[in-house]
Amino acid sequence: MALSPKLVREFDELVTHYPEKRAGLIPALHRCQEENGGWLSPEAIEDLAAYFELEPVEVFGVASFYPMFRMTPRGKHLVSVCHNISCTLRGAEELLSHVCKVTGAPVGGTSSDGEFTVVRVECQGACANAPMFDLDGVYHEDLDAAKAEQILRRAREGAKA
Image (cartoon, rainbow, N blue to C red):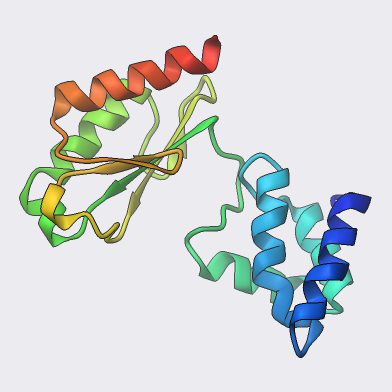
């Protein structure tokens, strides 16, 4: 079972805050993803469907609709490179290419060593400081290749320490 007794207790409390049980699905998806190393396994989808009295395809439909949910395992570090118009005009595509080169991860994929997953994302709201990326929930702005490489190398070294 992908839902631990602890998660079930959390969900039992969570759903008391909503008029319908199923309204707690998105927060539950977030929690499952956190507990499962950053992705939603097929087993978690099935268990959530059973808990929320939904069909698995309904839970999958919600999870696959929103970009914050991952349906495949991700690396230890998630690098989200913004590519809105401001970032693109200020070098986001070059930054993305360099991030992929340094990490060894393709866009939308994970490096062979499992350290990094690199994704292209929509606006992160840091347009004045483009180009930028979010590394594990921390914004890094006004990036060039050298700054990006330094940040990513520190993350890799920290992961091995």
